[in-house]
Amino acid sequence: MGNFERLNFSHPLFDDLDHQRMTEVCAAVRGYSDARHYGFFRTLFAQAEIERVLLLGVYFGRDIIFMLDAARRACRQISITGVDKFSDDACADWPSDRLGCSWEQAGFGTAPSLAAAQHTIATFGGGAEVRLIRQHDEAFLEGCTDRFDLIYLDTAHDAATVRRQLRQAAPLLAPGGVLAGDDYSDQGTWGVRSALSEVAPGHAVFAGWIWVAAREHLAAAARVIA
Image (tube, rainbow, N blue to C red; front, side, top):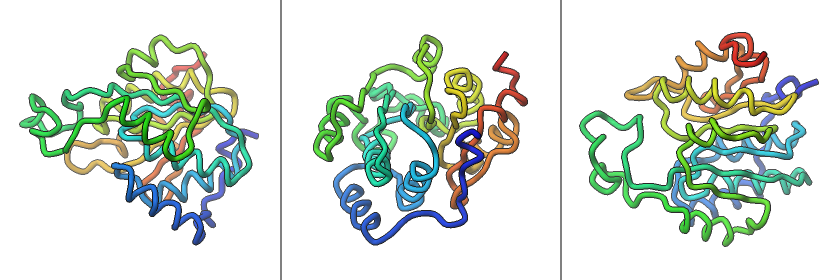
């Protein structure tokens, strides 16, 4: 049985201790993840056999801290590879009138940096189990030969990027592995929902916002696995 078949989101895990920890992390670490993400990771790691994680899109490290918390609560030992371009140039899902802007100019505040993410993750207890790589996700996926039990996509959310990432990431899944990501919407410049419907039919959605798909879904739709 693969990890996807094990998942049951009807009773997500999120207790008072989780809320306290999530609030503490969110107050100290910039990011957009919230109780939905914390509850997703808690539920996922409690049910699925996950040891090796790939996260595309580190930002300032909030999701990595959430994952480490969830794994520790589930008494699981995990390793996380986090990939981010850690640069001040525009993202593919920014509005067209901001594509030539810096993060500050576009109104998104200070751009993420490798040093800032490393410091934040270490402050919240992350150590050798976390490896951060400064690289564009497309180049990383193209050259990666590792296999992962969970690949979490959280970079640009335009449909073209998500479709490309799904096809590139599928061959890097270990047997029984799952793909997941957030911002399940087609609002504005985003196209996550439509990309998933096209490339990974059969995916599940947690709290209306976080999606998860099995390797088999992508194999059937995108024909990326021999």
